[in-house]
Image 1: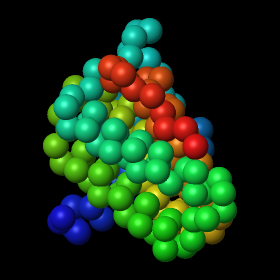
Image 2: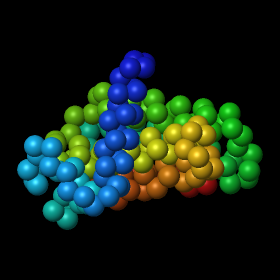
Image 3: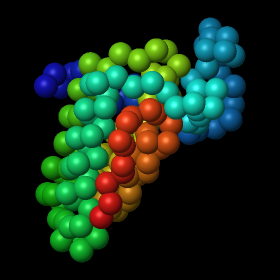
Image 4: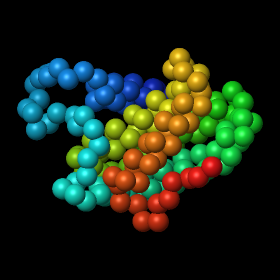
Length: 161
């Protein structure tokens, strides 16, 4: 895996996510109002956004990894090393999706909000966010739920623990 690409993706995504979740000030930076990054997830005129095979594969793999971890997390049998390994899996899968997924611009902008939550959750699971690692797993699960609500992925079911 290309570490520089992952770091660049992480930085861009976190910046986008922080901007999207941040203050209500209007920043113009040469963009018209129509080009502004969306502040929150929304449907595509009432319909779910299209996905492609690399994105569906990535989200299935993250969902499966979380599904295996949830019973252990809920049973308080998930240690710092386990959280670190799960965070690495999430980050690697996101990097794959960013590299291989080809969505239209509006769907991609929506996906970036989900990716920001996935990566922020991974960062918390690594112990880097100043909050419990468990909260990172919760954030990843919320991102998976949002993905299922806003993106068309036949057969999608969020992992249960």
